Every structure is written in structure tokens, then in C-alpha cells.
Length: 488
Image (tube, rainbow, N blue to C red; front, side, top):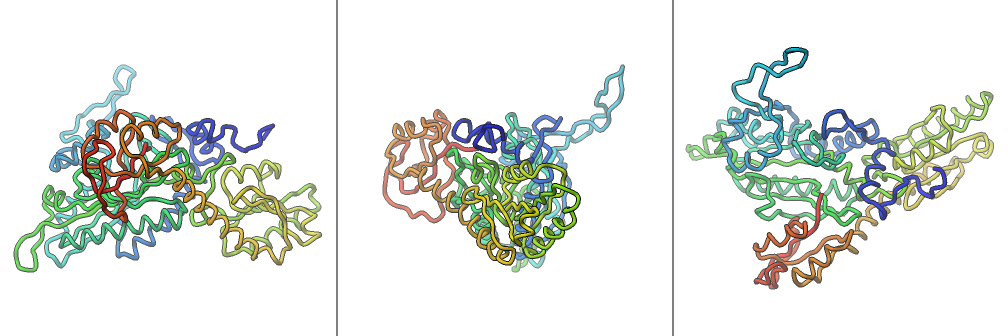
């Protein structure tokens, strides 16, 4: 650590963006790739994603959703069938136009143009909808509920690890229903599920909201969103659930024989969450010592570091470490036997956000005790008797998650302004370096003013009630509250 008082050399307050990237490197979450805008997710980062998958996948299956897989390519002419959808993704698409590479005069040159260019999956509504059209013939075939875990490509101009990369990982659920009511109910159930996941699992305070028309998913009737405040005051869109109406069904002809013998178009939904939530964990819970991971998604809850100063004590120390691991069998435990100093290991795991780090040497064996460092609510060294450790662990881990959520709630409460009355006051608020959210009424007009200050309308909270007031942008009558923020 050198002379620094923190494990991360750049503090959040000094340079939040540089701090974010240093945490990724210091916590060994990801690395750069030779492919422009892409990253390598390293084992520690991927373990977090796997745990997210595990939790969400089980919940999807409780709703009757089954996993499947669809091609990563979509013919361009299929995209063109839904005009608003293609316009929403046109500038982000990577397109395959050739099927061969030949060596011509010492240079590799694409040859053999393909007849119909193929978009590399930016999203799968159209290619999945085409399959749904073949699978659905009668109302008896509905509802159809599928999900896939896969990669996506969006040709982003400016990239940032986890938050916005050319290729990223996600799950995308797609459903088809007999009626609008059934489809909307499902979209809202998924919205509630995402709220549970982000709040109860990831311990991030987030706002359940509905996107205004100009922010909806391309081709959607309604987009439900989860918006969370990061420590720099910016908003992160954490997950979305879309009711698509019959727009996509009409484009690819997902129609079925109705109960009265006629032909109806299916009502569809789509919904997803991505690896950007690893970035969300960093920015919501990270500190100047690294990342902090909530228990459900942490690769390990406890890391045990044997302190072996001579070969004579090796076997005895390792045996004691195994006994500690067994006593905590309900938690994810790692014994790190790498040939590295215990101090370096401890700070390595502090940067990685491990909740409890034990350092075990001969003194602990002789005293039948356990020395450990806890990560939350602050870094603190402590010790206890061996027989008491399992109880102490449960208490510390409970406090660990509670501290993360409490800090997230406090951040949102302290940085959400509800008393701004007009655009000039809003402009002044967002002139601050790390402002936060503004909750205010909006009439539907004046969006060009927001463009001038780099602010967007994130959502209208689903639990807010309408009341008479004035639009913060135009002064017109307005009755609906919206969240305004800078965003990632």
C-alpha cells in the first residue's frame, strides 16, 4: 500500500471516473481486450455475474419461464419490418456483410458478399418473434415464456468497462400472451422481480418507474425501469421490462386462433438485465479501498489466509484452517494457500470486497482463536474464540449487507432535491460536480432545455400520486412527478 491510507490510490472525491477504473483493476474484475470497446471479464468479476445469474434464473423459472437459445444473427430485412425498432438500433448495429477472407497480395481481404446482411444481435425481439410466429397457432399455445442468457453487440462510440461496452452479457426474456391484460401483468411481475433483486439481493436503493414516451424501448408501448443513484449522483438504468403491445406480433405475424374462432395477434413482452450491474455494484457500494459485494453475489463470504512461517507448522495450520472452513459450511469459504505474504493477500481481498478475511497462524492455534478483518461497515480487525466464530460470522454478514443498503438509502435521500421550482434553479443544481436527482413535475414539453445541461428524464415513479403543480421546464400546468438526472 505504500504511504497511502487507502487501498485505492485515487479517491472517489478526487476523480470518480479514474477511481472506478482503478477499482476494476485492483479488484481483478476485468481487463482490456485487443478488440475495440470490448473487455475480458476475469474470474472474480465473472463469479459475481454467475451468482447474479443463479439468483435470477431460479426466480424466472418460478414464473414458468424456460431457458432457450436463439441465433446471434438477425437478417437486416427482418429488422426492417418494425420501423421504430430498426431506427432505435440503426446507429449501434454491427453488420456481417461478407462470408470469406482471402489473402490478396499479402493482405487479408473480406470477399464473397452475402446476399442479406446480418445484424449481430443488438437485441432479439425480431428473431425470437419470427420463431414465436411458427410456434403459436392457437390460444392454447399461450402464454409462451422464454429467456436466454447470451451476449449482445452494440457498436458504442464511447465505451466504459461494464457500463457501456461493444459486447456485453445479459439475459433477455420474451413472452407472448393471449390478451393485453396478461402481458401487462407479466411485464409488471418482472418489474417487481427486478426491484426485489436490485433492492434485496444487490442492496441498492432504486426507483421503480415508467419511462416517458421519448425514453421508451424502440417499439414498446410501455417501458418499466429501475433507476438507481450512483455515488457521483448520476443515474444508472439497472433493468427494464417492456410491454410491446401487438407491434412486434404484427411485424412478424405472431397470430393465433382465438377462443371465438377468429385470428388475433399476440401481445408480447421483453425484459432484461446486464453485466452493467457489476459496474453498478462498484459505483453504488465501492469505497476508497475497493469494491464491496453483497452476500448473495459475493464470490466468497470468508477467505482464510494461513500464515506459515516454517514447514514444521504447515500441516497443523492448514488443518486448523480446514476446521474453520467446516464450521462455516453454510457460507462460501476459500482457503488461500498461494505463496504470497499474508499482508498482500489481506489487502488484495479487501480490494475485492470479501466480507470477512481470516489470518491464521500458530498463535491462533495455541489460543484456539481466530483473527479476522471485517469489511463493513468499515474495515476493522478483531478476533474471537474458535467456538464462537460461526455465530460471530452470521452477525457480521448480516451487518455487512445492512450497512450497504443503509448507505445506498442515505445517498439517495441526501442527494434527491424535491423543492426546485423552475429551470433556472434546476440548471444551478446540475452545475454542481456531483449533484444527484431532481424530482419535479413535467408537462411533456421543453425537452430541448434539458439537452443544454446534459440532463435526461429517467422515469416517473410508479408509486407517486398525481397532484396539481407546474412544469419545471415550461411553467405549464402539470400533475405528474418525474426524476431528472445525469445518467450513464
